[in-house]
Image 1 (cartoon, rainbow, N blue to C red):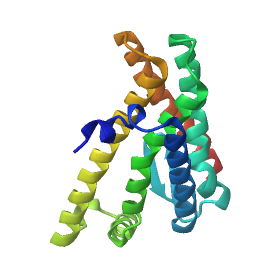
Image 2 (image 1 turned 180 degrees about the vertical axis):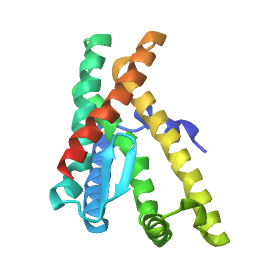
Image 3 (image 1 turned 60 degrees about the horizontal axis):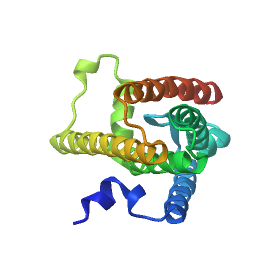
Length: 193
């Protein structure tokens, strides 16, 4: 198996194919979000919102991609003046792909049942789930964690390819920027919901 292709497609696949794939996944994710009530309400968050507007359902992911791409491009230019916006955008689009897979899992009926019980229970300690629900929840949680780790591997490798980042302090600032972007995008999107 070609592990380099899986973990660092930026060095294996042409720029054009990377961009096309990233845009295709983003479009499919927007359509899926619209029909299933999925809101990407932060760089690291996915939630189901029953009453979200069509605008939020369609464009929450666009807001995240645009904010991340602009901030990381500015940071990339600071690191390396030869950084190109298209390369940063491609890295961000690929970073989002594991979140789209996770979004399909959040629409499983088991999550609706869990959410229903949590909303209607006055005491969380009295909630009881059957064994199948617990096992499924543990499995999906594990998949979410793997998707999150994989997303960051893609983002870091894509950003490294785009900027030639090497210094430890730049990686620290990169992490800080992602956390700030989480707060910023969450604020923007939640004010729209």
